[in-house]
Image 1 (cartoon, helix red, strand yellow):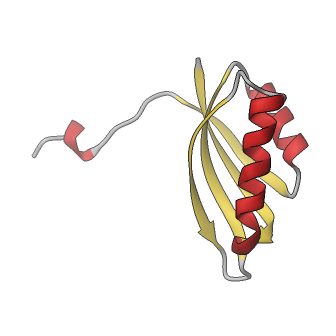
Image 2 (cartoon, one colour):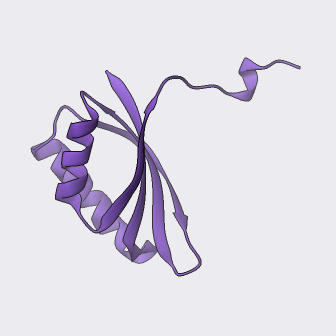
Image 3 (cartoon, helix red, strand yellow):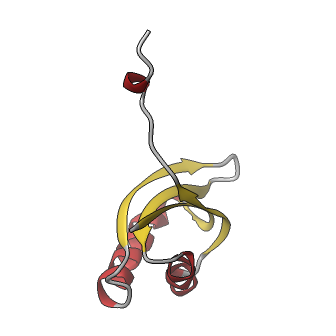
Length: 93
């Protein structure tokens, strides 16, 4: 299955993110069981709003967008297909 990196700018601060994460998980479990949420990196900008970099496994980008529309409270800045992963171990000195 295809993996995607989804970059989102949320309209909420860090304190509200646990509820957003719970809602996202419930949507995946209830309406989008084909999606697997692998993990997310979370940052907070200078105004206190949250930005996330999420990795999802899903059958299509459209399904990721459908999930995002249901989740709301954010704008998608980018969705990119992940074509591979590397670590420093892949480049020995």
